[in-house]
Amino acid sequence: MSLFNIFNISGSAMSAQSVRLNTTASNLANANSVSSSIDETYRARSPIFAAALSDASGKYHGTELTNQTQAGQSAGVKVLGVVESDKPLQIEYAPNHPMADKNGYIYRSNVNTMEEMANMISASRSYQTNVQVADTAKTMTQRLLRLGQG
Amino acid sequence: MALSMDKLLGIQQYTLGIRTQRAELIANNIANADTPGYKAKGLDFQQALAQAQRGIQSHSLARTHEKHFSVEISPQGQEKFRVPSQPDTGDGNTVDVQVEQNLYAKNALEYEMTMNFLNGKISGVKKALGSGQA
View 1 (cartoon, one colour):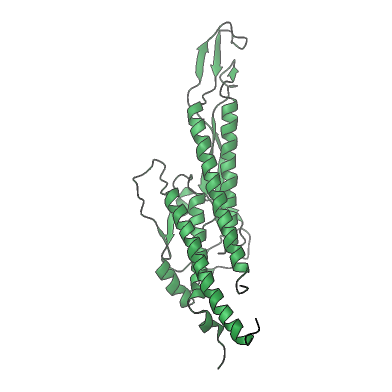
View 2: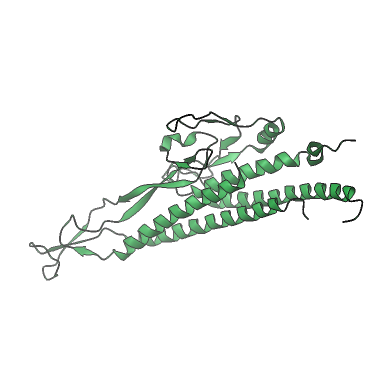
């Protein structure tokens, strides 16, 4: 329990948000990817967040969602993994397309550009908020270090 | 008359610790603003302060093997779940970032205030000890 813990907490949140931003960038970049088979088609990716617990040394442990209610141990957020969306792909009949399969179909990724844009803004705002939290914690720590000097 | 640091710093020394604890709690709420199923927590200030003054702290069990669970027994009832201001947002998360941000800023100012009180007390003693030199 100290101010330094706040740096760990908001640091973990910042890295989680940048993972999210990363997947968003990847999704947007591949929004128009085309392939000639269902298996090879790009699918929208998104990270799964979970609250993390820490032991006294500040190491993070993953936790089941049901364990979160345990009181007294709080330590940021961690990315459990990145999952691919199972929304149906867009199948298009385009026999003239160079990527068309033998039946004349091409497969487009299931990325929803609007969703990704909203995700991007949300991730960058969350990142910003956590930077502010860390900055305030820094000010508080500096103030503590100067206690009794002024 | 002996100079008692404990009496000199009074209640402010405990207040500072609780403000730190609260800052950590709110930082954690903000960090988990996008975590599904996370429930925002708050600190019962009055209870925490009373317990800090009586010297009740959290205990943790010793771990003699790396596979032991780390168990921390914190004083009862300091951390409580916030009452959500909105019905379920769909993912079971009850963090309201705006509210938490404001509380965090407020807490930082209160921390500053406590610091000023402590500083005032310390500089008072310094003045007395230095017999007006500095």
